[in-house]
Length: 209
Image (tube, rainbow, N blue to C red; front, side, top):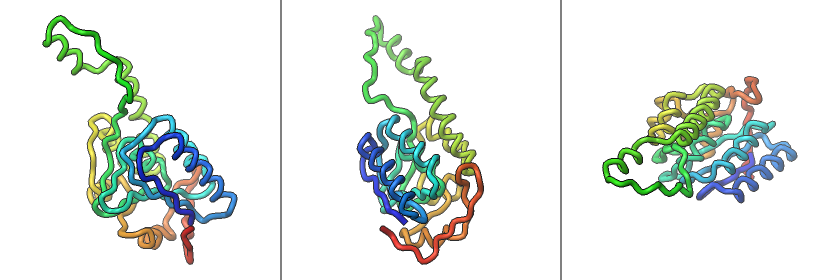
């Protein structure tokens, strides 16, 4: 199993690292990829490049939020939902997936504070479009991997977060594990959806590289 790590904001460098690593693992007949992740989120474009690599991968990609105290916010939530296996360490959290503009447009000054407050509280047509697109995107992965689509939508629209224990109870993730070894033991022999087909994970006598 090839172990990859994201520790920080997701951007072009991480996207390139991930895509190249998926190709490497596939070409070297790895049994799976274990992506350990602790991220506040990142760029939408980089996230989508990584998700496309997951969707097209010929080997299973297991995303694991770890260590204790780690989080997968924003883009990290989408990556977890898109992965073939979604897991968390106890004491981690997931969510707050509302799209955030890195460079918000300046608002036009208003004559009165009341009008200004009303304008700021009402989302623009573009904001609604972006949020609706994000909701449809993450719910699509929820449908593929049979995860909680209602919570995913709430994470996008209302920026909610969830603990590892709650995520398992609500079918947001597949497993909670104390370590990567424990996680592999749990998922060995389980079925996943790969490229639209149900396959069985065979992860016996593995080594981590």
